[in-house]
Amino acid sequence: MGKQRDLSTGIVAQIQALRQQGLTQTKIAEQLGISQSSVCKALKKNCSKRTNCSGVRKTSARDNKQLRKIAVSNRFKSTSELTDLWNKQTGADVSRSTTYRRLRELGFKSRVPAVKPMLNKKQMEKRLKWAKEHSEWTAEDWQKVVFSDESRFCISIGDQGPRVWRRGGETYNHECVKRSVKFPQSVMVWGCMSARGEGKLCFLKKTVNAAVYQDILETFLIPTVEEQFGEEDFIFQQDHAPAHAAKSTKDWFTKKQLEVLAWPANSPDLNVIENLWAIVKRKIRDRKPTTLDQLKQNIATAWEVVSAETCDKLVKSMPRRLQAVIQAKGAATKY
Image (cartoon, rainbow, N blue to C red; front, side, top):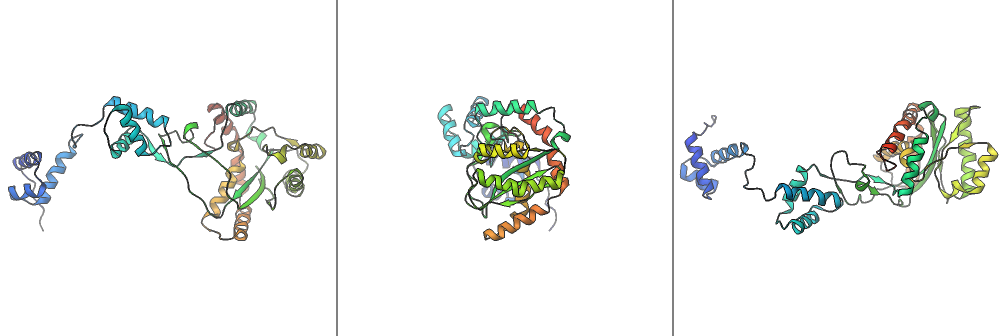
């Protein structure tokens, strides 16, 4: 079939006039003696030259400004809910699709929210103070620190929950993150790491009280630091779990003459081992274990292949993490 000839300006004008009268493309084609595809092409070509082909916009700049305020104040509302609020506050009568388009024009996109621990004002103030106090530490200073933490590994992942309306650069804004809760039952693991590599891994079989924790440190931490540091000095990092803060645990550190790094509460974004856990979880994600034994084996295998270069790179990020906390005034960061 040969290439279809372009319609004359006169025919195109007739098509537009008939379309404005309400005729369908089929009726226009029959009346002018041309194909329906030619009519469609002419209308589309004309539409592409116009900024608005659907008529007068239903919302004004003032309405759109009000929608921006509504979206910022109701980050976790659905499009339908935002539409209802918008119509109620402005007296407009817009559809869900119109609301969605305006939100996109305003820079908002519906995204799965980042998950961060809840931080109260006092905790943010302490995080900010701690970050400022350690802001002079160099990457070499941080290379003397042994980071530790527990992590839970799940066989399956549950519902991701509601989405959040946010604009570019707002991923970790305080009002845009989802607050984390306890994980479902699975496998709990304790581990440690430094810039020199990953440490010994411990699968926890029971609730960790002070006595159990001290046994973990004796069995898994001490061999790790002896292997990595020998006679060199190091600093041990831990969070504020009850077993960690117990008097008998503090006495254990004193007896062993181990220096413990003061640590701000609810600050996993400052602990580089959290990123190491994430790396391990990504490695085992595609293996889809169906039993706890399979899960444990996958974890152990993924942990063993972590390179010292990876650990060193994570530790070298500490100065940047502190600056991020300072910039966020103690709030959660992207780390």
